[in-house]
Length: 270
Image (cartoon, rainbow, N blue to C red; front, side):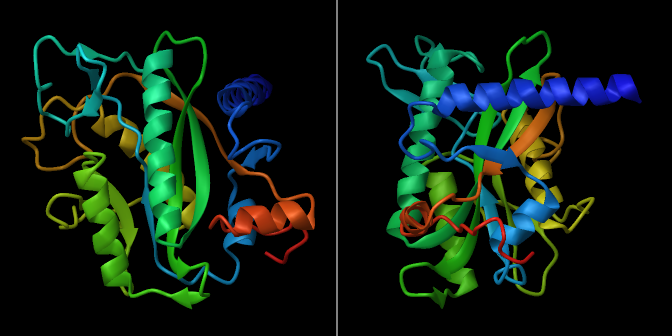
């Protein structure tokens, strides 16, 4: 037990170090800091919205390619690169990380332009044989217009995010909790549910499960099974999960809230 606890603490430190290094010069997370993604922390942030339905999505892809002219693109799982001369970016490399950061910023800009309230979440993982932790960033998005304070029609909201996830980011699926339905993965191209029995319906657990599924989809070589969660991915382990820290001042709270982030003070009731 003690050995396991020391391993967990080491994994957490590795992920937090990688997270701080990745975002040390990023204006979005400058001086924000990070806290572990726990049920208590997440519930405090979404308090007042916790009975709502939601979408969990990401712009990151494992299979990214670079053309001789320097353009970077991705393809859906199971599809080939556009040209034999195109270079595959190695996951975990600086080039791969930088490309996904650009995609993530574009997705964040899209969420803000539509005034969707969101919670940024981060997963730290290690490939087999990899010494340093890599970071995946996703968003929990709520059908709430932060500028007007009004709730949105969920069907229109979900359809918009499915279309954007497929058309721009070639994501295979996103996790959606529709009203009066259990959470499920939905095919971004067809909008159809996968009909999976998820191990939990708790938002915190589902967020972590989505990170793992997202990583698997990027490693699948074919989808003959008809399920995005089938296939033999590269061996990897998720080390720790984080979210943005609570604001320390009223000014920080205002700035982050006015950009669309769902944010609370630490002493806000759970």
